[in-house]
Length: 194
Image (tube, rainbow, N blue to C red; front, side):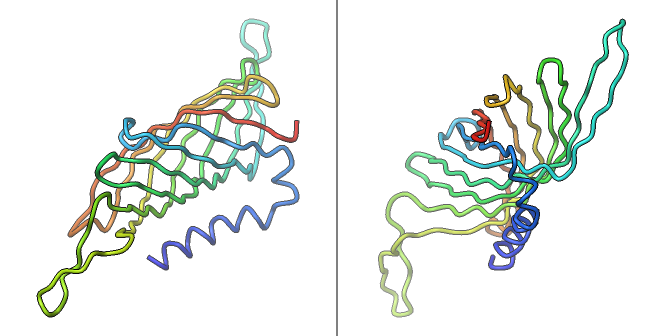
């Protein structure tokens, strides 16, 4: 698990190495983060553009401009599965975004690398060598969580936008194998520099 945390840190550091140019106009994303879409939580993050380019097309005597970009998105999320566990997620998404400049609508596909820490609800006991049981303080377990993500949204103006995001991932190692996980996000994109 230390290797996973180090990998996430290193990917996040890619964005820090280009901080001067990337943080100019960098938005903050904040919103609902739901495990299976129904276990409520919250997620906060940012998007750092690595590269952007534009394409123009003539459609019915109107010039349509589409902006495309490659981005890195470090995020921190939390959710609560009532009477089961609480989840804490640290992840970095790397993706491709297409924006239709006329209406500000966009869609994005990304791949995420994350570390999920689940804290058990209720009381957990550890079996001791002498056969007795001892209450475990802050019982939890860590997982590697790679994800595939689809995001859609709209840039309403230079300062505000909204988004929705659906993620499918593989939590591992889970007992003796892998378990599929899904997450839904919905929130605001706020550009504090505008």
